[in-house]
Amino acid sequence: MVEHAVRIAGLVKRFGGLVALDGLDLEVPRGSVFGFLGPNGAGKTTAMRILVGLLRPTAGSATVLGLDAVADTVAVRQRVGYLAQHPAFYDDLTARQNLRFARGFYPPSPDRRVDAEIDEALELVGLSGAGDQAVGGLSGGQRQRLGIAQAQIHRPELLVLDEPASALDPLGRRDVLAILERLRGVTTVLYSTHILDDVQRVSDTVAILQDGRRLAQAPMAELLGGAATSYALTVTGEGAEQVPHRLASQDWVAQVTTSPAVEGHRDVHVTVSDDDRAAAQLLRVVLDDDRVVVTAFRRHRSQLEDVFVDLVDGARP
Amino acid sequence: MSGATASTSRGAGALTGVANQTRREASSWWASRRWAVSALVWTGLVNGLLALILWVVPNLDGPAEIADTTLAESALQFTGLAAVLAGAGVVLMAQGVLIDDRRSGVVEWLLSKPLARPALIIAKLVGHAPPLVVTIVVLPWVLVGVQLWLAGEAVWPIGQWLGAVALLSLLVVFQLAVVLVLSTVTTSRAVVLAVPLGALLAADLFTTFAPWASDWLPWGLGRLASLVLAHGVLASTQLVVVSVLATVGCVVAAAWRFERSQR
Image (cartoon, rainbow over all chains, first blue to last red; front, top):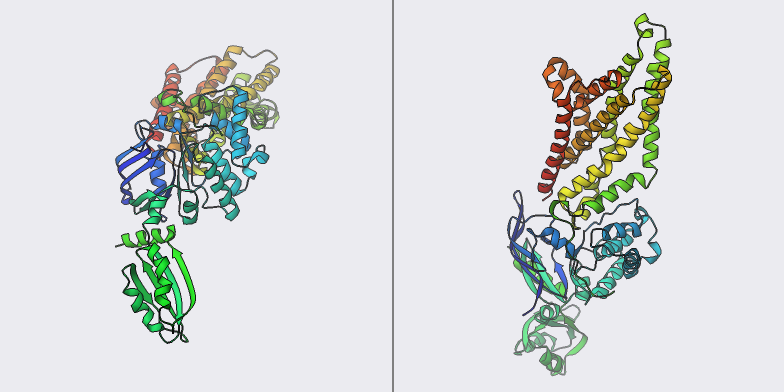
């Protein structure tokens, strides 16, 4: 049985007439880098704020590391690190001073050890050179990285990161993803984002939310493995109009779509149900007719974006 | 980075995290020039007012009564005005103590740490009250004592001076508590400024029409301090008790309200 760092059951949160969470269920396995996906307004931030005690749920339950997120909120926060979507700090203090202040909420250690922890945290996020700069003068990317450093300054068992890379430029995003990679195996990471490439790169488990509900949750490989593979080819020649019919008759083909020929060239899109057979036979079937010429051929393996779009579109009324 | 280690529980209940937060609030004064600047400004303002009353006004051309004003009467007048200055000063200086942190997102950051909500309110009071009292009342009033000594050519009774300082300090702490409770209700700077300033100015007027209220409104501490400084008379012990209770009440209300807000 998988041990869970977070368990959410039937979580509901209403803000007046607005339903932010509508019976959310979620399990975050311990040790995972868990991507929390959803369009804007899906309820990701609300769920995360409930986990760290910043909001109370209207109904349902949430346990974090075996503790009730509402009744034991202070105990939860002793074992969890949190990064808000727009991290705020004391701008008059340096990065190092902010980390020392944040560290002060946790069990005391000798000064030398705290200094070492702060150095280690700054190094982890690549801010060793900016540790003595006032936070007010840091760039957006540096603030985000400092946010991760302060969230894990006490080496929490769970890191909850709300959109840690969304506001950053490509280089900043790359740095933050590298930090998440480095945290793999050190702690459980639950992070939200709407940037699908990021999730696919670093997450091992994914949940997709929409309208406050979970649409899907699975390990990344399983989520992508369940998605269809497709092939796109462009054919020409006298027998080209017969190609879609011949392909559709194969039992490993799920769907064939075609576009009208342009200057004798016809695009054919083939979704397959058995990729191994398709890889071995598809071109042979097409070229079985000597009159057909294939001018373009491309295999397209579904990305998380395809899965996400399918799920979200499919859930729309 | 070594493996994750479990943090053990620290602090208890409503006071969890209060020590760390109080250190931060206090250091925002003592670890910068803020306290020195504040002390200089308030010393100048308060003593400028007293100098005006003691040395300038009696020498102006005017009715004979003004020139004949006794030192005790001058001290009485001055303390009433100094109390309004102190009560207004604390509101002006402390207006952003909580709402700035709420608006900037710092409060959300703090509350994601093991810091209980009531502990944040208590830390704001305990961290800011001493520097406010020291810079708005205690340090300026050292020079006030010197001016009174010079004007009277004798040391002003130390007990009376201490009594007035203590009462004005209580007014400062009470006003800070009012600012805190308002800051849990709203993030509007205008409201946080207007209510305690308005009450400070209206209290005297109100007690003119309703004399019974003078023993019940903490904003009347200035009047009490005037009598203590000028004549060594504590006119109402009840008002002191009421002010202490009102201060505690505001802090409890702020903690209660904050526990339920932003959720």
